[in-house]
Length: 255
Image (cartoon, rainbow, N blue to C red; front, side, top):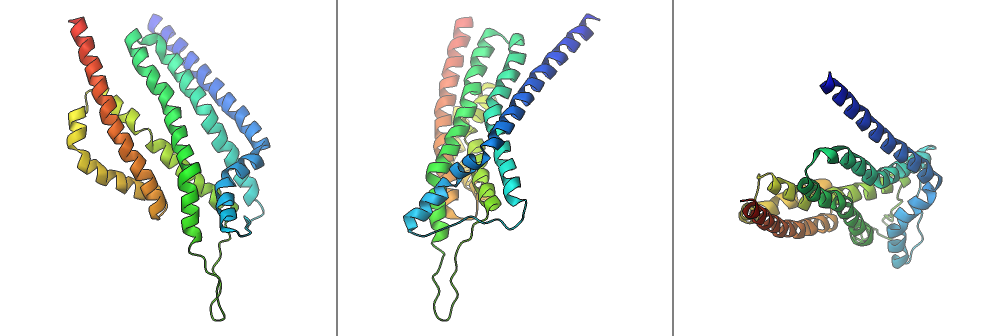
C-alpha cells in the first residue's frame, strides 16, 4: 500500500510539473504570436542584409491566402519551444533531484546548463555567419537576361524562408549537443578519450555525411556545420579526458 501511495504521489508531482511547463509554453506561444511579425522580421534580417549588400530591391511573397498566418503560427510555436525548453528541463531536474546523491546532482547540473547554451550558440552561428553566406551563394545564380534569354531572379516565399532558417537553426542546435552526448557516454563507460582519438578519422567522414543530410545541398551550409562539429569533437575528447581524471581521483579518495 505504501509503495502504491508513493507511486501515486510521484505521478501526481510529475503531472503537475509537466502541466506547469506546458502552461508556461502556451503563454509564451500567445505572447510570441502577438509579436510574430517582429520575430519574423528578425529572422529575415540575414536575407535583408544580404540583399542590401547586393544593392537590389527585394520582397518576400506568399502564394496562398493563409500562408502568412500559418507562418506566424510556426514562428510563435518555435519561439515558445525555444524559450520554454529550459523551464521544462528545470522541472524535470527538480522531479528527479530528490532521488539523486549529491555527487550525481553535481554531475548532472552542468549538462542541464550547457544544453540550452550550446543550442543557442548553434543558432547564433546560423544567424550571423552561415545564413548570410548561404544567401549570397544562392543569389549568385541570378542572371539579368539578354535579348535572347529571360532573367533568372529569386522570389523568396514567406513560409519557405522560415522553413529553411529554422531547419538550419535546429540542425546546428541539436548537432552542437555532441560534447554533452559524448561526455554522458563516457560517464557510463561506453566510450573513453583514447577510443575517441583512435576513431577520429571515421568520425570526420560521419560528420560530413551528417552535415550533408541535415543541411541544404550547398557547400556553404554543409562546411559551416561540419567544421564546428569537428571542433566540438576535439573539445569533447578534452572534456572526456578531464572527466576521466576527475573520476579516477574520486575513486582514489574513496579507496
